[in-house]
Structures are given as structure tokens and as C-alpha cells.
Length: 113
Length: 113
Image 1 (cartoon, rainbow over the protein chains, first blue to last red):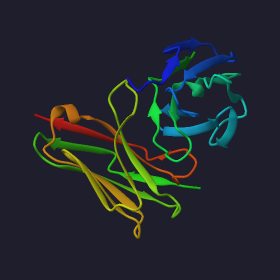
Image 2 (tube, rainbow over the protein chains, first blue to last red):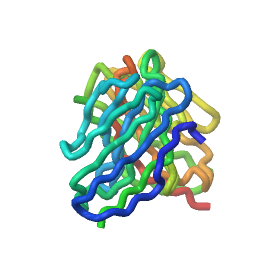
Image 3 (cartoon, chains in turn orange, purple):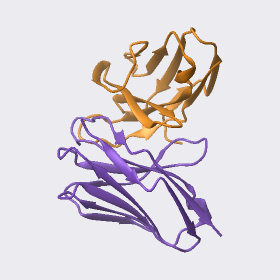
Image 4 (spheres, rainbow over the protein chains, first blue to last red):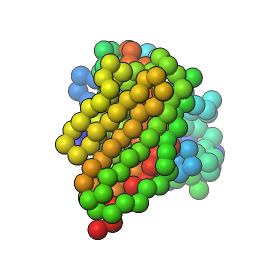
């Protein structure tokens, strides 16, 4: 167990809908990273938060947004869902300062039908 | 931005043989290079990492080598076992203030007994 908790494990929804994925980082970690894993694209960095502030953006669509709350948990919001958004969404956490070691949660598998 | 290429995409070996996976990166500022192992349906797990001030690092049957001049790094697994079968990902990032990881597309390693 990495200490990073993601919920839900599975999510099935329809096109056009909106979902929220949740992540709780390891105790003491200030940074949360969101990654998308699809079959043909590997692990793609979406967005990073550090101590409540957005720090970096990767290949995140405008339909997607995220935030990190004062208790350091993070939520990834996906809206106007399309079939191509079906993927595994991983959250990772790290200290975010001197080191860059990242530990991954178990992921949320999103199926858009 | 950083780009990481990984080869081969699939690798089949006999139990007891060695396996080598190679990655190249493009950003000379990158100085942190982790390797993750992902079993089917599971989270990526950090198995070994190396920083740019080190040329080689070993942990039991796995080792990683780094050539900063050529911008490539490799994972070596000796005496492979069936439980080594998984997808292996290399990644790179500048090791400053917890920046995001840029991943290669992965290598599917199959170890047959």
C-alpha cells in the first residue's frame, strides 16, 4: 500500500456527464499529481498541486479541472465527458520540495459509455 | 519540454536470463530518473531511481545506469523470474521543487519458465 488513497475505484457514466475523482495524499506529502493512463498514450501528466496551489499543467483538457483543499486532498473534475476520456486516472503524491519521489494511488477506472 | 522514448515496447525472456530496457530523454535539465513497475490492473510502483550525480545504482537483481552525456538511462534485471513479468515505465524530470514526471510509453516484459 502506497498510502495514497483514490476513490472511487470504478466509475461508469454516459457521454456528456460530469464526474469527480478524489485523492488523499500520503501523510506529510504536500504535492498531488494527476496522471491519465490510456492504452495508446501511456502515463500522461495532467496537473500538479502543491500545498493548495496549482504548480504545473500538462496535457489537461479545458473540460478538466482540479483543486487541492486545505486538508491537502485533491479532486479532479471531468466534464462534458466523451468516449475518449475512458481511461485509468492515477493520483500520485510527493513531498514536493527537495525530492521528487512520487507514490501512486490505485487509480480510478473511468468508463464513458 | 521533456520527451522520453523507451525501447523495446515488448520484451520476452526465459527465466534466469537478463533483461535490459533503454530510455532516452531530451531535456538536459532533467536530473531525476525513476523506474516504475506496473502489474496488470495495479498501480505503478517505484522500483529504483537514479539522480544525475550517480552513474549506476543497484538493488539486488535490478540496476539502473545513466549516461548524461548521451542522455540515456537503462534498467537491467538479472536472473529474471516469472514474477518480474509486468509493464516497466521509465520517467524523467528536473529534480527541483517536485516537478512532474514525464514517462516513456512502457515496456511489457514477459518472463517464461
